[in-house]
Amino acid sequence: MDHHDHDHHHDQSEGDERSGITADLIDGAFAPSPRPDVVGVEIDGETVLIDSPTGAVRHLDSIGSIVWQCLDGTAPLDEISADLAAGFRADPAVVAGDVLELTRILGRQGLLVGVDPDLPVRPQEPSGFPVGTELQGFRVDSLDGGTFDLEAARGRKLMLLHWSPRCGFCDRIAPDIIELQPHLQREGIDLVLLSIGNREDNEEKLSSLGVQSPLALKDDVDPEVDPFRGLGTPSAYLLDEDGRTMSELAVGAFDVPKLMRETAGVPEPEPEVQAPEPEPEPETPVVEDDRAQPKFLVEPKST
Image (cartoon, rainbow, N blue to C red):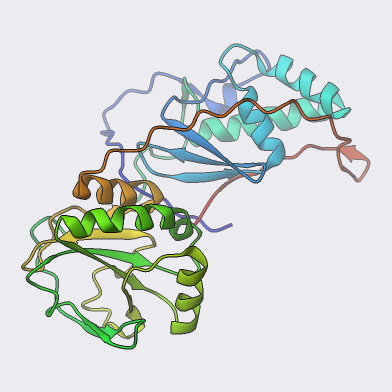
């Protein structure tokens, strides 16, 4: 899977002392607990882990998601493994090895309380222009058959949103765009999607999502003046009437809607409270090479 890190970073100086154990010291007696600022979002039985301070996104498959839900800081790995082996009717030794392997990976990636990550806490930050930078002008075709001219857009504030019709995280923020665009307009702010890809793909994507925002096709933008050169999607700047950045670069499916809400003065929605789902019936695990193996994926997830 592709790798992409999003959103703000957490600053940690080189002199900071580590206070946890290394992942290699995790054993069956360890009772792992996810860091409270790591958010798990379930999608189609799998889990997307979002590290809020760094914005890094990682992916767990369906079995890894079950293990993640068992990490409560109370039950040791030996107990979790035994319960899973009984539930999956799998070889206890195999399950214990897989659970231990997964937990150590989670620890190395800095997702568990009391475990020092192997990798730096501060990921490579997407480079953006400082606040107050005047963006260079460009003119490109727009989806409605006209043109978008950044110079001509001066005189009004502008939310310029980097977009792609093949970006799953762009799909996820589509409801936010639909909700917040009228609020932005009331604040005198125009929202324009500056999109990768051809006209047909973008027309099909906006139609399927129900997004009616103006869209400019960026493929003909000179890379030297592309404000999102080398950056992923979605990402966004707020520009003032003179075409200067009013905000730092917002990157990812969390920070882009956050910037839009803060700019429009719309509070964050209250989280939905869902009733717990009934316990599923245990399934017989897949056996490969005579080895019952609920294997797990912990891989970075990309837009």
